[in-house]
Image (cartoon, rainbow, N blue to C red; front, side, top):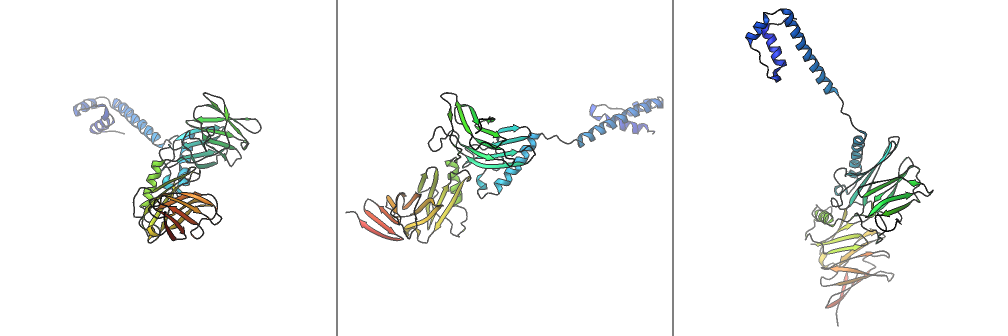
Length: 396
């Protein structure tokens, strides 16, 4: 292939444009008087350099990025978290994406990765367990944890953890490390030590033989004597600021019954029964209750409401929230500061009262407006409410 001097000038200048090399036409003409053999050698070298550069660029473009096993696992767990969280009715109260990784326990090709949200991020702290079996199958568990270091049921020697079973028959204990712990030792029922992986404030004890039903979890503290944890238990973290924000947001959502809440954003009652909580809001013709469930399968709040025309003057029970046991809410006269409920069997419970609203947790009996008698009092009067009928007696 033969090139003119102008063509050769263009080729060489283009090839070495980034080096700052410039070649004048006179120089090219001078070189053109040299033997054509030299020109052909220079041209061959230039074309070879261009070809090598092109091959390198093509190879770089066709190279497939390498994805590590950990990256692939994280990607898979993230998609599974999104799928599980998105199916829940309380999905808007869960972290929008996969929480940070806190523990990665591996047994050969099998692996359990534990992800945990920060306690202040959501109404409840969220744990997401992503477990890969040796054959590649993955199982996931979504649950709620208690605040770190919070005793369960007043027992300072109890930690928050749960037992999980994987499809391959293996089992795991997953939970929170008690404060001040130096080591955790897990022993199966057959006296075999179970490997424990700890990360941050969490631990995973994993047995491939599924023999953790009667396992013993021993805590070796940095100071003091070792002690044994009780049975697995997980209760919910209560983040009051997040809970309040969700409750207020729920107040102002369009009502499904067509009667929007009109009233203040501050609850007239804040009730607590062994970790179960209910905040009561009293508006125009409507009572709204925001309930927190401490169990590990509920991740936020649930809102209930009762609309009644002339609600402020409608005395008695307005709603029951629960299953067998739960909360009873209703109205008493606005000056009442005490209230008790008496069921048809004679059982009696004492309610909290504020701004003409009462609330109480009940564990037994039948509590309905037709069978419950409410006795309330104020500095000036005593009240009896049967159904919705109010009887007032001045204090003598």
